[in-house]
Structure formats: structure tokens, C-alpha cells
Image (cartoon, rainbow, N blue to C red; front, side, top):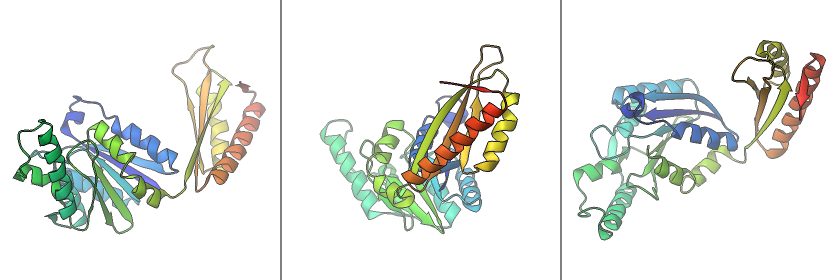
Amino acid sequence: MLVDILTIGNEILLGLIEDTNSSYLCRVVRGMGGRVRHISIVQDEIEAIAADLKSSIAAGAQFIFTCGGLGPTDDDLTLAGVAAAIGRELEVDPQAREMVERRYRELASKGYVSNSQMTETRLKMARLPEGAQAIENPVGAAPAVVVEVNKARIVSLPGVPAELKAIVEGPLQNVLTQFFGQGSYREREIIVDCGDESELASVLHEVTKLHPEAYIKSRASHFGPEVRFRIVVGVSAENAEEADRIMESTSTDLSRSLGAAGITLKS
């Protein structure tokens, strides 16, 4: 499954906060057997959000996460951008409204907010693109939103990491399982006694041609005689058995090719 991640927020582009949501979602996708194709960060502008979403859909992304921009303020424009991208209107969703109202009643009862009145700014969080599904937010006030368009599914999540994780690991699980199924991911690290990545390049190239379904990448921080490269092999498959089979076959061919090139593997 090809996945795109769209993070929305001027505060990230200004360097005021770090985007940790994308790396978290990459691990989630990888663990469920999907593959992240593209990550982007865009401004809090309807046109920019819509353009990026259209680009992802046109490029064949099957699942698109958006992060941020679901709140009550004027610069929270994600759902307006989603609606513009897929040619639908925003409308008050009864289920989303009930979620927001319930949350503010809870907050008011604890004294966290002054009242539970459903103001226009609060109602804004219940305006979803036509045909969208609201997903409970166990931590914050703004629901997550799932909308289908053609063969793609767009999941809009809050930008606050604690809210995003609570949704992904809780109420969104049914959606993720339904979409990704029983996909499986395997990752293995091989350490080699080699201080020059260019010596590894031809070996990795040949093994990658033999196993295009595997991701093979060498990593090192600097040159030097004491440098040992890490080679990471990642495999996604439809089930655990297939993932194991691909991993074993890829690792065997990689070890054999490295040995033939005179590169020693370290335990």
C-alpha cells in the first residue's frame, strides 16, 4: 500500500516546532506492511493543501495522512483544503458535532473551560467534507476525519502528537486494519567491515536488482579506517510468512555477494 503524509503548519516551516508526527506515522505504516511514498510540509493555506492532496491522489497514493489544522482557529484550514481537493462542500456532521459537544461538556465539568456552549468556533471542528466519517479523539476536542475519494482514502489527524497517537493507536485501528489487512514488515541490520561506501554500492545495486521488493540501504556517518557500515534491509509483504521468505532470500544473497567482493560481515 502506497502512503503519503502531508504535514500542515506554518510553525513547522518557520522552524518553531519539529515534525515528529511524520516519523511516527512512517513506523506505523511500516509495521502494518505499507510503504510511505512521499512526505511533504505545506503552509496553512487552502490552495496549498488542496494542491498537495491532488498531487498525491494523481501519483497513486492509496492512503494519505494529513497532520494538523483541525482546530477552531482561523488558520486551521485542513478540512477546507481536503474539501477543495476532492470537490465537496463542508457541512456540519451530526456525529462530529456530538463528539465536540460531549468533549466540551467534559472540559467544562472539570473547570478546564468556562462553558460548554457550542459556539461557532467550536462548531467549526464539526464541519467535515460531505461523506466523511468522524473518528473519536480520546485526548482533544477535534475529531479525526476519514474520507474516501476514488481509490484513495484521506485520514486527517490533529497535529498535537499526543492526540494523533491516541487516535492512531485507538479509534483508528479498525480503519487501518480494514485498509492494510494483515500486512507484515521485517527489518534486519547487517554490519560490514568497510570504510568506503563506494565499495558497497555495486554489491547493493546487484542485490537490489535481484530483490526489488526489498529496501536495502547502507549507512555511515564519516570516512575512516575504523568505520563500519550498517546495511539495513527492510521488507514489506502481505503476510508474515511471505515477509520472512523474502528477508531470508535477500539476506542470503546479500551475504554471498558481500563475501565475493571481499567485504567481511561482523557479528
